[in-house]
Length: 329
View 1 (cartoon, rainbow, N blue to C red):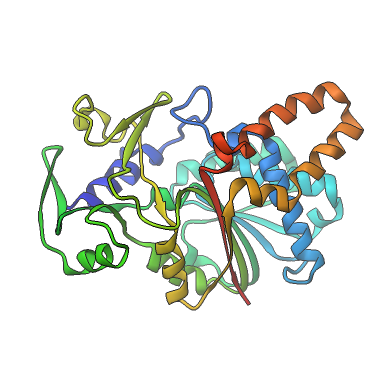
View 2 (view 1 turned 45 degrees about the vertical axis):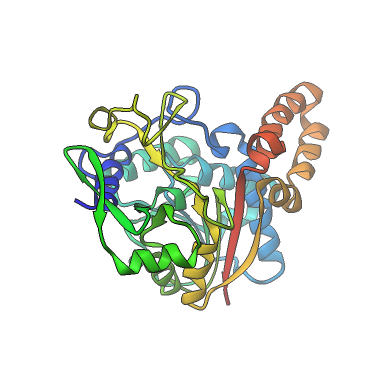
């Protein structure tokens, strides 16, 4: 099979890595911004309120997370909306796009435990089920989880008995490789169809996503496997694909120019692209910390500050992760 099919089975097949609940953080295979600090979601909540105040979003808009895992990010957003503008919980709607029923059940259970009857969580198995006037979409580390083709000097990869072989000709993938000026690396599959599906969802929306990568493709393979906070390049001789398949996370650096081009093809404008550091500070994460210090005291403030530092320090997540934001008006 082609590598993109192999990766899809690895992540989303019946026994795939994301087809069941996997812990994230200390007990999992990797950390995310969500597992690092609630102020990540809190800052997004502050931005949502700003978009309500400037009239872009309506008070009955759907706040929708894509690829929510356990639902922690959306829950953090709701918690901070309640803190900053509690009356909005009476009008805003909250939803998750999740294809797996068992994860929908886990997310519903978590929201029931967290909010009781105060919040009703809506579930959608696919973007095609949405038909709204106004949506704010949020996703964290979604574009790196799209399946990809592996390209090497004019050939793309297939997998046979967990062995990667470069011997397939594909003019479309070769054209993309030429467009993004690299002779080896990952070519994501599905960005264009994802953008088209999102365009049909709502008359007006904003989509904000955080991920790791750059505005240009890397000059070599970035694809790698995470297991218990250890990183293994896919072509590492020590990595046994037959053992890692479906049991570990597989990912690669995002080419954000490809993402922007996919949305431009659907006539959706890229409103902003920046480092996570710049984005979070611009949206007011330091203001939220100042509020915490005023109301909770120095000790709790110091604890949360250390977590936020991981999000914004350039040598940690601050520069490595990027924020990209699209707007359809």
